[in-house]
Image (cartoon, rainbow, N blue to C red):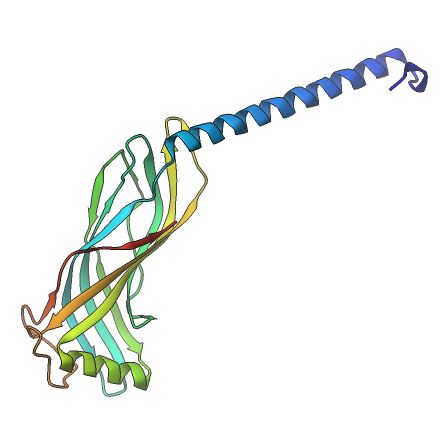
Length: 214
């Protein structure tokens, strides 16, 4: 701005200093963003890997009114595949599904930090009481038990952050889906009964990697 548009010379000096300050601040912000981008591209953090190691069915029963009661214990392992990046698990809830229906209450895992290449194992109990089943699902569950195989899905839903040195990212939504195939009565089925029992009545088939989305 020309000095002829200023009331006083000090006002023009103040405006010039203000413009220089804004330009310097913008340059610092751009430099910081550039450094963050370079660090991110160099480290290229990978999403955690999850594995379902075991599922123990304590009890499962469908009442005459098609209400499901179930208690199980799921053993999950999570591995941080990054050699230079840690992971904060700020929130993670675990629950079980049957054919797309959530059949247990979500169980919260304790918040934690997972170091480079670390492996963490959780074994939460999952339970649901009086979960209403549609006639289709009640029939499908009886048929699955009769056939001798039961397919459940263990899900993890939460929020994580990556940490590289002093740099910590914002939150990212973690979604994990783990198929759990169980044999019923050694694959012979329950012959139409929805009430199973006894040690080893339900057996987890095999450990398997989970599908992870971040």
